[in-house]
Image (cartoon, rainbow, N blue to C red; front, side, top):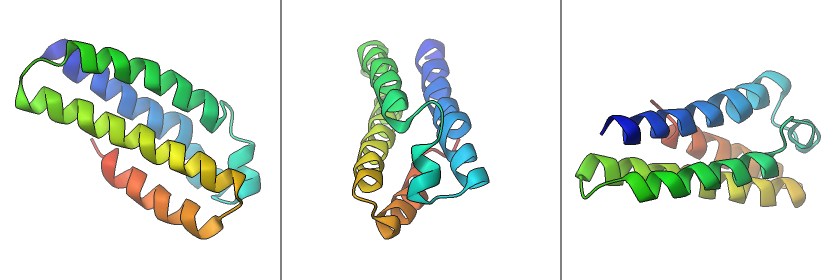
Length: 106
């Protein structure tokens, strides 16, 4: 359980420190979100890799499976946000940020 929980916490921490906190600090506008470093696309790539490992080490344990599912949902929300940024859909960005924060609570 420790490896799974630790990796899950790392994924959630990366989402907060690398995306949610800077996005809220500098603003949720399309222009500001395009300037976040690392980019949302780079974060998604990195998080997908970590999440794949999480899925592999999650046992048939209910809480570990839930951690894996929740991490997957966070990545999917970030993928949807990347699309909203490309489409310059400010309203969708704001909705998705709230959804991401709900899933990334820890």
